[in-house]
Image 1 (cartoon, rainbow, N blue to C red):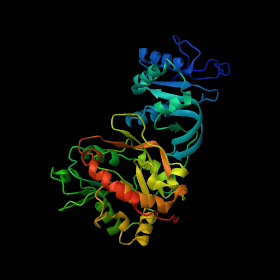
Image 2: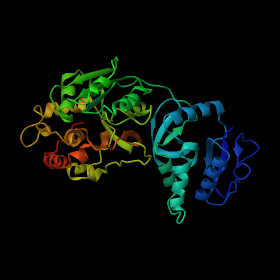
Image 3: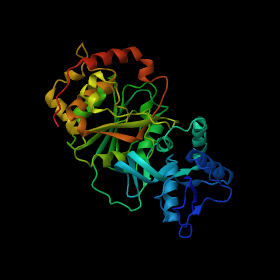
Image 4: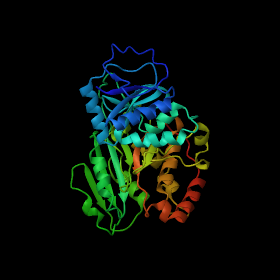
Length: 403
């Protein structure tokens, strides 16, 4: 049985006799305010050493939990660092994760949700910052404390045929981070993938960290080429199918949980989707980073703020079209005719975005990437070169949409 708190002022809609839930336990006092009631519920849970609480903020909520099944899902999520989940909500967009879970976006209303103990103090801290003025809409507040936007399905859904995903990861001197990166990828529950790691002439023996596994291919450069050239070489020298999904992950970063590739694969089940970008968090921070382009911004893409945050993916056929249109890849070359060293993401993704077209690109609202801040980040170490490259890239001629 899961302890349940009714956060609304009026709870006359509840049939307490039919419910199998432990509703509003002794010691919890309804204070007539959603924020205050949520704080009271969490404080009660902390004082009673309760690992999970079910919070109801609407009239349409679930009574019919299979507690063993619910505990299995909760434990599975907790092991991945996911400590909050929607149970009932009204939303516009949905991406399946597996037979039990989906991630939702454009949320219209929330009826109920579950919080786990590792996030209690964080939520209390956020409530404290608002208590002088509870002007933030409660649904907006929930999007902050439920950043992954996972929702537990009432009825299971069936599995479908998957795409092949290729994870391309160039790196240099990442010996301190590769274990974290590999662990985050190798634990993915989606299994139809291959990792291609390119050691760009490291001097710290990073290559020794790359395991000998069938799904891991390693490339060791004897001469430094920088990220974009490494990615181009992989895309041009390997045999990919048009529908294969290319996924760019820096080897000093991580995937946040084992469901990431499920989300990517399921997103591409919409056959119109050719590219994705999305939301991310910094490692050891739950605050979500990332926002989608508007149509107006996309129409002036090279003049708009850069919003193509990790995780960035595309179908191989978009790159194939780029080769067809620009077989010398002049769009990826600087004023001296050399492939851009940085920023590699802008150089490669601007043309692909333009070829794909706004309506064929999906922004994934749930965080699918963890970014590591450290002193060797290009935007910190090579700020001037990054900026000089960006100026040249933004001045390049826009490609016409093909798809």
